[in-house]
Length: 221
Image (cartoon, rainbow, N blue to C red; front, top):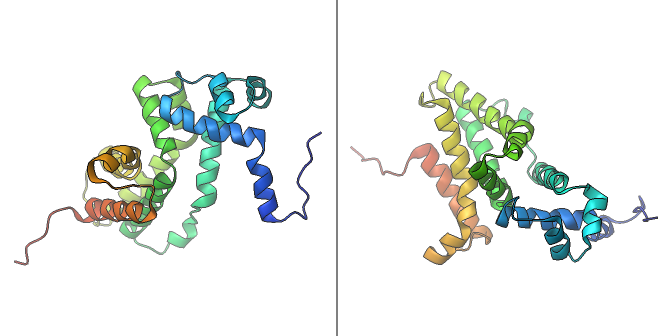
């Protein structure tokens, strides 16, 4: 029987135990493989081999490839929620435009911290799979609704242009999330490594500036 961590163990000891948990290792490995290859090109054997475990362990912990894929998505969303918590009560006194900037900044930082979720979404969009429907119902629709509500409030308040809602929300979300999927290209073209905090922050600032203020310099006249 696997020993459960004692409640007296230090946080460092607990983190070390989690890092050596086979199910956690499988999820971490699956995240990387599904993001780089797509669902169809990855087998449970690939996941096990890359993790240094046996294929039987994948089936023991998750039962099937479909289930480990779903568990991987759930694990990523839990991770984002833990690392980038958003207390909506902290935003209630802000005007709609300020709230939209805070939400966008948070979304950018989530995407920069781990582009794998966005890469997986791209794979699923290309095949328009049932897994995409699952993602939309479980996670994506909720995120769009948060942006939709604040944008609509901003339009009503006269702070945001009355553009088609789907276009405004999609532009902000796409710029915030999928830009970080292009890290290898930017590294080869510009010599910029988005894995470096300074570069990621510069890109984040540029996205906020361009989305909310535009790229043109306004004449003093």
